[in-house]
Image 1 (tube, rainbow, N blue to C red):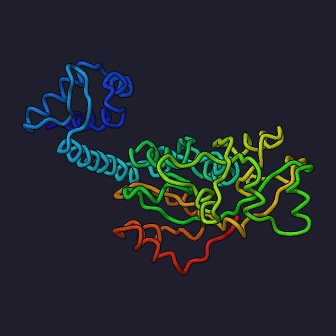
Image 2 (image 1 turned 120 degrees about the vertical axis):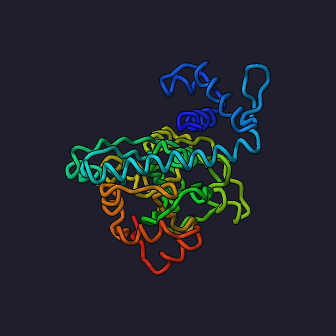
Image 3 (image 1 turned 90 degrees about the horizontal axis):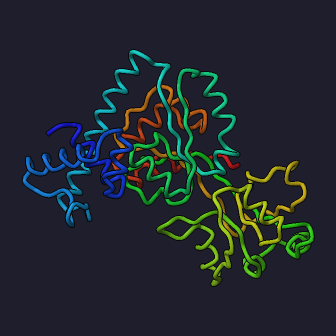
Length: 327
C-alpha cells in the first residue's frame, strides 16, 4: 500500500468518479491511476469502486470507509509537512480561504491587507462560493479555512468557531411602498412577503434562515432571483426586479445612496459568521494570527482548546459566555 494509491482513491472520489478529471488534476495519466487503484483493491481483496465495464459507477460501502481513513492519513501527512515548515520556514507558506462574496467584499479586506503586510512570503488564495460549497472545500482539504454562516453546522468534520453576529436589511428603491411604510412603523413579515424577493443563494440541502423565518410566520417567500453577490442583488433591486434581503454590512452609505435600507433584525434576528477548519489540522503560526485578526476573541489558546473538543455542542458551550461583536 502506497500513499500515492491512497491519494488516487481520495481524488477519484472528490472528482465524482471521473478518472480523466482526476488524472488532469494530479498531472498524471488516466491508465496510471486506474492501474494503481486496481492494485490497491487486489492487495486489500475488496472493491473500493463499483464498475460498469470500464466506468466507475459508485463507491462501495467498505470503499467509503477506506477513503475516509485515507483522507485522515493524507491529512496527517500534510500535518507532518506543516510541522517541519513551521520550524524551518515559519513565515512562509500558503493560506487558502473559502468564503462567500459578502465576507470577501465587506468583512475581509482590512484583515487580509494587514495579514499580507505582516506575512509577505505567505501566498494567500481566496475561493468564493455558497456556504455549502466552501464547507466542502474545507472538508476536502482544498481550503484551510471556510468562512460562512449557513450550512457549515451540517458538517461534522469541521471545527467551527463563532466570529461575529450580523444583521439583515431590506433594500428597496426610494419610490417603493416599503420605503414609505418604514417611515411610520416597523415593517412586518407580511409586508415583505407581499413582494417578489431577491436574496442570497440558499444552501443546497437545507432551508435558509430567511425561509425558516417566513415559514414560522406561515408565509412562503416569493424568491424570484438569488445570487452569491450582494452587489449583484443590489443591481437587480435597482432594476425593480424585487425587494432585496441582504446583509446590512453589504450596504455602503455612499455608493448605495440611491437605495433605501430598512433594518429587519426584529424579523430575522442576527446570523453568526463562523470560521471552520478540518479536525486534526495542524495550524501554522500565521494561521492562528489570521484567525485572531479576523476575530480578536479567538486567541491561540482558545482556538487550541476548541480544537481538542469532541463535538459541536462542546465547542458551543465553550463560547456561550463570550459576547460576540455585531457588524
